[in-house]
Amino acid sequence: MIYQRTMKEANVICRMLGLSNAYAYLDYRNEHVPSSKGCWYFNVWCVGNEESLLKCRNYGFTKMYTVYCSWYTTAAVMCGRPNMTVRVQNTNTLNMGRVEVSMNGTWGKVAYSSGWTVQSANVVCRMLGLPNATAAPDLSMVYYKRPSGYTWIQIDGCKKNETSLFDCSFLVLGRSSYYNKHGDAGVICGPPKVSVSFAFNAALMGEVSLVVNTVRAKLGTKNWDDNSLAVLCRMAGVEGPHEVPALTLGSKVSQVEQFLWLNNVKCFGNESSLLDCENPGLRNKNKFGLASSSTAMAVCGRVNITFELTEGRTSRQGMVKPLFNGLQGVFYLRPEHNYTNLAKVICRTLGLPPPSLFVNDAKIISRYPQYRTLGIKDPRCYGNESSIGECKKTIVKDDNTGGLPGLICGKDFYCPSGCACSYALDSVHCTNANLTEVFQNIHMFTSTLHLQDNGSKTELDESFLLRLPLKVSTLSIKGYKIHRLKRVYFFRLKNKLDKLTLENNDLHILDPWFISRLKMSAIEIKDNNITTIKTDAFAGIFQCSSIYLTRNNIQFLERGAFATPYQLYVSLCNQ
Image 1 (cartoon, rainbow, N blue to C red):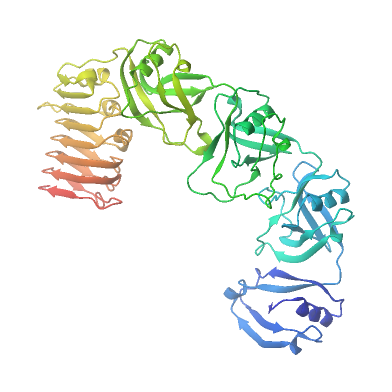
Image 2: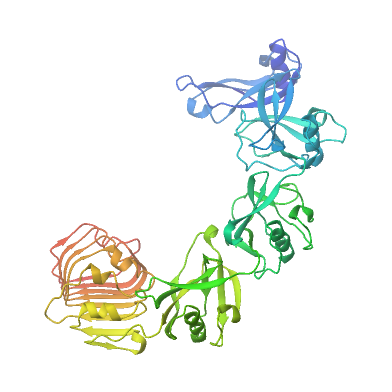
């Protein structure tokens, strides 16, 4: 391998080979050095008129181990002007693609640089007999069949009358793809075919993409406003008015470079296409940065809002799911506000009796950005409206912090016999009650549930444990026979369950991760007969003020049963 590669050393090498003066010096990535032979390293400086590299100033030859050989590139030269041709590598459109040049039959890319402009792209289109260029994009994010791996040249600039790209001012790079930090120069010859696509095309809603000659990419949010929204919806065949303003979709953390077709588009609102608005050009990396933490989101036309109740035990109770043009959305409700009138409107819309219970924050919804739609923020109703459309509200984007409220229309519950209940069954204390009656008549939003069996050791089986109220925060089970506590029983409660008490039960097996809750205040397990506590039984508890195990007849405790991701206070007394 030869180090200190310049045109001077390249000329000496060509002279040693009896060839014409060097046209360029190149980099060749040394990736295939035989494992047993290693390589020689030769650091050399030449004036340019030497007959041999050995007559140049050098440090001699150094033997290197194989592991170091791939860290360097081997010197390569091009002696004499090569035969050069141009092509456009594309997918299924002849007038758009990445520009590639051939040097003596070896194809490579053209580096995207400040000299790559529409004027430079025009020369390529002229060489290929295509219409004048309308854009000179950086297509490094578009997948095309890869060339040899070389980036051959960088265009410094073209005038108007060149007949060949090689008549322009250019620099021969000859760099391998390993060292290529440039983009890929591309062309669009003639007017492109541009259309609009949405994340949810049927509803004309969601993250926006531009489709340019079948290549799909996102739209940036700089200067993204209601005028741009009007033009984009016109491209989709929808005229105003548009009920939802222009929205953005993204995260608070800056993302890596995205493939954006356009950014910084300024429209008046009466244009027929975004390309008719003032814009810096398609994928013009010289005019706008491609690093973005947000992309454009749009909703065209009016929005039809309906509701449905889900996850309820009957058709009159459950989570209220708002549907925007048929797509699930979320609510943004303030915990301190009373939404009784909103509940009346929802029950009336669903054709159900007036509400008996409304829970503001029954369930949090978390979804990936591409699946997010819209949300209803702090709706205000008088209670006599026939639909949510008549209420005062704000429609916003789903930013992954919204949720679904809980609702019961009509009195769909009553206090079971043997139980003491608070108003609306928010708190239920049962002693020797019939479990079937209890779970048939309490509702899914009960927050405190105490179940106690004095002496008979009734079996609390899977059919009951899978019906524990979703919003229960305090759960106490005393005096029952439980064959196995599986992860699935309490996993449904992980967002709400705060305190768990298991007392005087016959517990056969505590399964791994039998309880999965990010944060709890206390777990108390005492006076139980426990046959086996499995490995990782408490591994699902990330934060807990205290875990008490007192006077349990534990027959078999597997290794790692109390292994948790964080340090927890665990009290083991008289086990």
